[in-house]
Image (cartoon, rainbow, N blue to C red; front, side, top):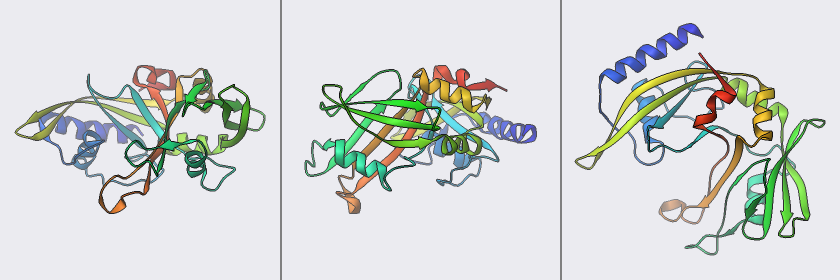
Length: 246
């Protein structure tokens, strides 16, 4: 791993020397996609780390999102299409396409989150059965169901294969002549502490789970559901609670 870190550091330094670089992508995540293109990495959705065992996370300085998406993991059970079930059962109509349901929520283990004005949701860790459950209650806070879950085994595999090592890159952005440019300014490397720490951070609410299920409103996918992932997130400022700096 030391050799891989040195190799990626050298590539980063060469990119940093280039100063402002025109974006090679448009829309969401273009700062990360541009960097990955610069190091010769093709875009894919494999459940493994981006660069020889190191997951690359790129953040815009000052204007970037406050939360860092660690990884995405859909339910292990009990439903085959758990997210679709959640959207159909507890979602609400899109404002523009009212015949289609959507579901957006960020859920933690430390407080009840109100969803769709009719439900409350939270996470519950079951150490005996080694599962994390999504708890759903009605507006009177009476339990409706405790069925959707993630297995510890699945989540540990995600940590080991996807985010055991992390390269966190900071960048700046500017617009010039209707084009977007990035300047990559800093890189830091981290190693995850352990799975027990990951679970404890879910328990304390430092790691939350966000659902992002909407509907395409134009193009040949009009009316189809899009799922931007069931994401396990942590605030950037709390990264050292989960990771040791290398």
